[in-house]
Image (cartoon, rainbow, N blue to C red; front, side, top):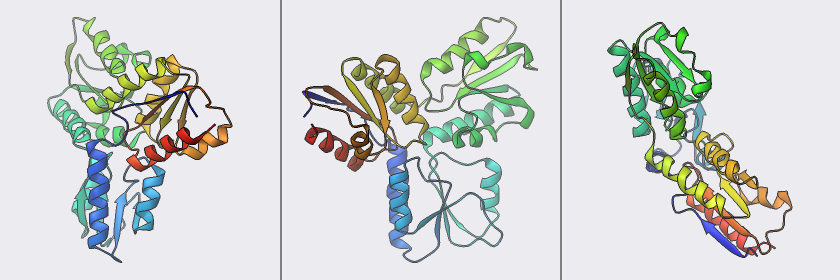
Length: 285
């Protein structure tokens, strides 16, 4: 048994994820044996997605002609051209795009409509960023991971709008903003599209990781925000492990006896998965 267990107060699902899950469950209960799909995985937690699939929610990545039934748009959102396909179809659409992600989409559209060249700081392969990018003019939006990928001289405009993937560490966004501020010839408009809940998780998790022997970060391997939290914790504590379930801790074959253990979780991790991990850790040797 660990000597001490420190659990992050902010661990677990954010309001956007919770709303998406509860709405999907309500729709499935109301539409038993009917055609209900999510456009892409509803959230980035395989355990929750599997449970919803067992209840009848299938996952699709495109809308076929003559599609019927109900489509739930995932929490990460989808590109605007796919939204248009949904509008032109006969399906019943339930949009569960996180409101913070919506803010990012609207920010890109606003900047692009006002002739700003848009810089999105984030992961270019993440569905949230792919969706947000579609709201800008095709040749006037770029995605960079951080300031190291920024090539100011290659940008064909002096009017720059800057936004961020909602879950990245805030310093990645503001570092890029500060670089542009060094150039007086640029007109820069930065819109903070970061999620406060994620930022709080990152800050609290980092502080816990500093004070423990072992840090566990619970969340889907495909969850960007969970990976960011794990990376932040690992920077201050090399004994940080991102896990999806307690079984992965068992598979590590490590002794937790007399150790100070920290536990946090990403924004897509449900309470029951966190509880299973806590119970398992407390009962372990």
